Each structure stands twice: as C-alpha cells, then as structure tokens.
Length: 192
Image (tube, rainbow, N blue to C red; front, top):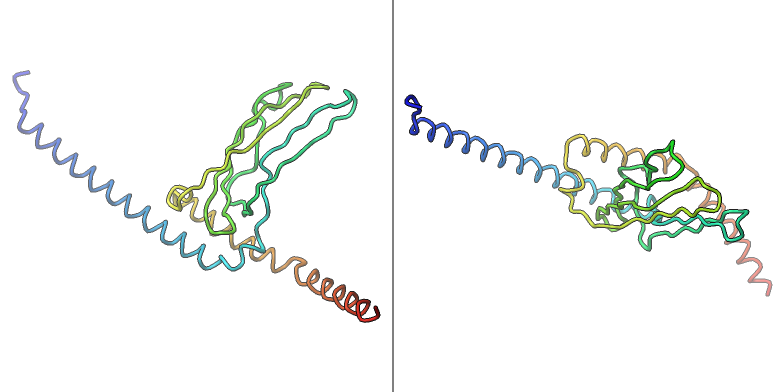
C-alpha cells in the first residue's frame, strides 16, 4: 500500500477516460456517416420500392375446427415492405413436440422507413392442438436498423439483388399481357 501513487493513478484514469471518450465520439461519427449513406441509398431506390414491396405476413393461426383437418388463417400488414434481414418466425426446439415462435425481421417500408417485426407465439405438432404466432411492428431509425458495416453491406447487396431480380423477372411480360387485355376490353366496350 505504501507504493500506491494516487496522483499517477488519477493521471492514468484521466488518460483512459479521455481515450474512451475519443473512441466513443469516433464510433458515433462512424454510425452517423453510415446512417447518411443508408438514407442516400434509400432515397436513390425509393421510386422502385412500390414495385419491390409486398404486405408482410404478421400473423398465422392453425386450428382444428372439426378435429380431423387443420385450417390456417393468416394476417397481413396494412403496409408494404421489402424484407431486408431475417427469415420470418422460427420454431424453438424443432425436435420437440411443442414450443414457441421466436425471431425478428427488418423490412424497408414502401415509404423508406425501417420496420422491425418481432415474432412471438406457440406451436404444437399434436393433432388437435392449435398453433399461432403474431408479429409486433416497431419503426426503427436508420442508425438502429443498419448498425454495423456488415449490415450495411448486406443491405446494399439485398437492394441490388432485388432490383436485378425484378428487371430479370416477368414484369415486362405481365405489363404487355395487361395491355393486350386492355385492348380486348376496349374493343368489347366499343361494340356495346
């Protein structure tokens, strides 16, 4: 105890605190820069979001009304979004006969806002037992949704893949088919 130098200890503590503050500030600046880039990406692709988004499933209930055949009811969100991260609700303990639904997804909404869906519920393999899950939606800010460089890379890749898939898909064929149907409808209308 005699060789304890409180002055040196205080100086070291002060330097560590300053280093920590400097590191925290640098991380905050990095997170802010990442959020600005994320918003720039969203603003760039926003005109295409209505073509890429759909109403996510936010609830499912399986039940046995007559004890012989199960029926399933689903609920969709009243908003549209593009799945960015996640795989939907997952069953815990898949080898068990019953358990809970868990998990979360992050969607990019048609309006450019991030929405987290957090899943909860119960499942059962027993005949006659019901299973159900639902998702609670929470709007996230850009900084919270894309909180690491890995997530930023995944976000950018997902957006790019979805745009390319849409361009390579059947949207132009579907549009042409709709135009042909429109021509037929107009021709029928002109005959009346």
